[in-house]
Length: 219
Image 1 (tube, rainbow, N blue to C red):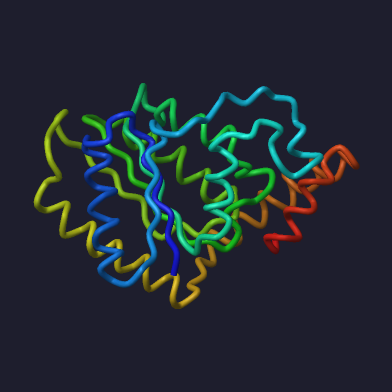
Image 2: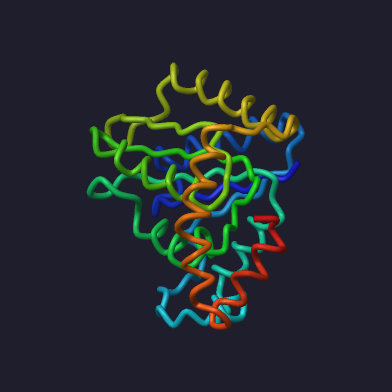
């Protein structure tokens, strides 16, 4: 069982990173093969909007975004974590979303996912919604979204640690049991069939790389 964890915070020792590291330790102790990535340590350029990836199936820029996409492709599970910036995800996480081949190419098809969002007020729930939509629109199965509101520079609340362990165990069971989420699957099927697929089909040959990815992922 391979699980990829991605930290979208610029702080490698902040609350978001601490929660993700806690998940990493717990999942590793349960026998999972975990890969942890700090986006702030990677070389990911801004998307140029050239749409070349839709034709070829890969980005013309050979940087760490492509490496990370391949890591996600090979994973059974994915955990995305971000702090809240202006009721949204961090800039690092937005770069990954823009470059990561998620929605149009259906990168997360059949993968079980969790999201982690931290902040100090209600805006963290808005940021969480961004990640939840990303997962479901990309074909993933959302096992749990964790939202933690805590003062800046504080550690993980003791009560939260217990919940994190429970949610990590749910992720393991979902992956092992190939659990489906009927409502999520139905919602995704509507989005894909009525929105994404017709849009891509109208593009014809200019989006042939997308169709190739759909076949690869079983979308």
